[in-house]
Structures are given as structure tokens and as C-alpha cells.
Image 1 (cartoon, rainbow, N blue to C red):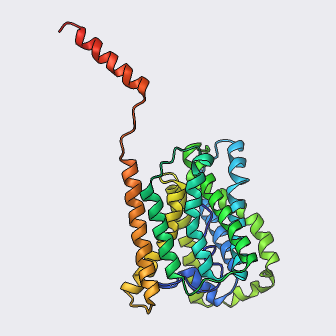
Image 2 (cartoon, rainbow, N blue to C red):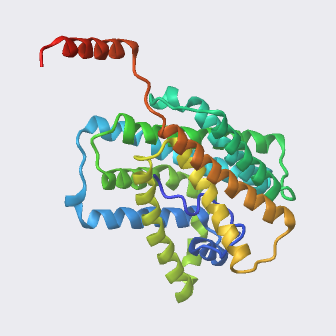
Amino acid sequence: MPLCCAADSPSSEPARGGEPRPVSLVLRAVHLPITVVMIQMAFTAGILCVAPCGLHFGSLQHVIRWSVTVPWLFTAMLTSSMLALRHSSMGAIVVLRNVAPLVSMAIEGVITGERIEVDGATILSLLLILGGVGLYVSNDVAFSPTGVAWMAFNMTAGVLERLLQRRMIAVEPVDINKTGLMLLNNVVSLLPMSVLVYCTGEVPQWRLLARLSTADGMLLLASCVNAVAISWAGINAQAYVTATTFMVLANLNKFVVVAFGIAVLHEASSWQAVVGCGTSLLGGAAYARARSNLASRPTPVKCSEAEADDEDDEKASLQPA
């Protein structure tokens, strides 16, 4: 998974609720979100290249198959997120991101080739999460037709990125190890990001990086280390859970941070924020329960297999002891 620390919050504002993350604190000092993401990518690629013996690329075909899809979809997701923020509030974007799992669930089986079981409890749990999110951001939902278009494009790019990653990691795995996928994600993504950083006018502002204090520099380094961990965890998680479940987890972890801030740090919050956060987390627990119940269901035996078993049992009973 490409790095997404700054991508999830391309503005310079800290994460809603909870303590600001290292990358958010860095963006307070220097308003260069694309540049910060590029630094994180270059840092990750550099770390991986320190031990090239740990990288495995099975075939050029598999390298191309991955490189022409996932990194470019990530850049499209990042770009559309920034453009959507110019025409919509963060609250509107958060709501639409929580609609994405419903869209993903509807098309995941077609794109990944997996047999995805869905029941009423799963759908209701996703709607419960969405309702909680809507209540949480009820005072911060504003958008224009242009904003809706960019948000829809952002959701489409995000869903496709997750689905294709899932297919190439777990369903029809490419012959590339996890660290190799991380390297491809970050190196290839730097190509379109280089164009994006120029188009957004950040290049002339790079001189601001030289003015970072020691504390801000350490925070930037911490965000880079954190980005490596996120990239590694994301790729490994996609091998064990469906793309829809991955998106649900990614959305809910933000509300875990919010809940921690409210319950432990005693941050001031409106009743809508408290109830909305609690409802979303409850929906997340319900989703986990629903998926667990589906996974524990016995696999139905095909008729032909059942008949064959009956014939074997009958033959065994006729044989002398």
C-alpha cells in the first residue's frame, strides 16, 4: 500500500479528535503536504534499498502488472482528495469515504474473483457506521456539485486501488515479495507525484524546509518511520482480509483515536460527536461479528460429493468384517 499519512489529511489541519499525528504537526510548520508525502516515499524506498537481498521480483510481467495500476491509483486518490477539499468540507469527504465499503462490497467479487458472502447483518453494520459518521460530522457537511464530482472520483480511485491490491496480493498473487511491493509502490508513485508537486506550486516553497526547527525535523523523521510501518502493515493486512474489510478498518481507526481523545484526554466534544463516534465503533464491532459468523458457517457440500460419500458408506457396510 502506498504511503498515506499525509494523503488521508492533505490539509494542514490535525486529525479530527485525538492528539495530532507527527505528520500533522509537521504540516503546521510547513504547508507542503505533497512534498512531505514525497519525502516519506523516498525515505521508505531508501530504507528498503539498504538491504536489496531482501527484495524479490519474480518476473518483469508481474512488476509491470503492479506498477501500472496501484501507484497511479494512489496518486489519483491523493490528487482528487485535495481538489475535493477545495469545493467541499472535510466532513462531507469523511462521510463519502464511509460509503466506499458499501460500493466495494457490491463489486468486490467481480473484480477480485473471490466468493464474497454478504448477509443482512453485514449491510446493517455498515449502515450503522455510516450513520454514526454522519452524526459525528453533522455540523461540518458542505459541498458543491464540483466537490461531489471530485469526491466521487476519489472514492472510485480508492475502491479500485484496494480491490486490485487484494487481487494481486491474495487472489492471483504476483511473484513479488512484500518488501518488493513496498518499493514499487513508493518509487513508481514518486513519478506522478513529481508532476503533482510542481503543479501545486510547492517547489518554490521548498526553501521553507531549511527553516524547520530541530523539533520539527524530528517530527518529520518520526512521520517517515511511521509511514514505513503503515506501508508494511497495509500490504500484509490485504493478504488476510478482503478489500471491503480493509477499508472499514482504515475508516474506523480514526474513530478509535477520537474516542481515546474524548475518554482519556477529556477533549471537549459536542453530544453529536460523542454519540456519533460511539455509534461508529459499535457498528464496527457489529461488522466484525457479522463477518466472523459468516466465516464460521460450514461450507455446503455439493450434491455430487454427498452422493459419492453415501455410495462409499453403502459399499463399506456390505463388505465382510
